[in-house]
Length: 285
Image (cartoon, rainbow, N blue to C red; front, side, top):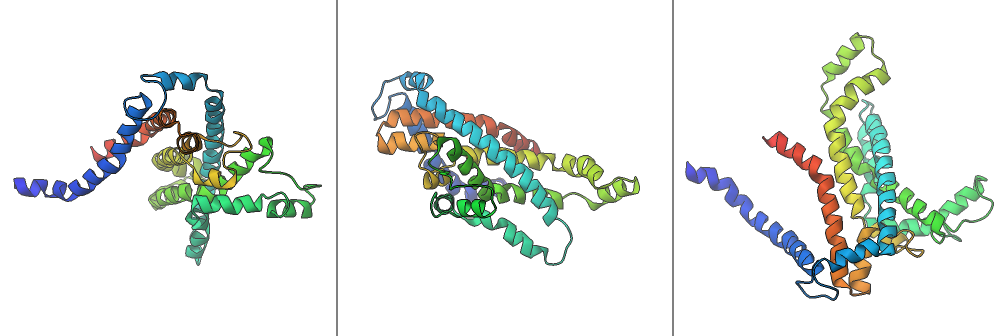
């Protein structure tokens, strides 16, 4: 009996060890490097974290990350819920629409960044061409070269590319709602909107929390889309924390400072992920 009890743990042990090495080693190294205990240049102790407090570039980058994540996640939630509700309708050939709806998410973020960089190009981009053809613009706009428009352009691009992720989570939640609840609401005279707010959304609340947490974590650590579109420019107008870590580490070789930024970002994401972790542990209990 004792052997059977531990059989499952032996099966997952190799994967657990691999994850601990692959994820744990870089995490521990980053923490040690940020306080000067391992390689890299910069002060020891909390000097790098103190430097963050007075670094204007870090403040601007943090603000960019906050604006980007809030805007993109809000769009993902609204768009994802709307598309999920449409795809949940019982219509002929709905699998075709589901395939079409998920296509943006199949595009790697680096490739997506390069594609949207071409679309937002001032001279040859399709965005300017369509805008001028519809009379919405009188002359081509420098979307990615203007500090006031670059972040907006990146937000719009990632909003389109990433919404299917949230949509899939919410669609799975919609399909798990018992049909008899809608039938009972219909018998009571509830219309579509009443059913949405009193049946659909209350049942979707756990899935919405999961979708928000996972999407926030993903968008906070997004790198390829922004790097492919703007490289963080012009200036620091579109630079997020992940891109700042990359530049500090691989361009300026300030590894200790880059590690401190990465540790701060990881700590914030850990706090954000707590609701998801609590929900998961509660279900297992």
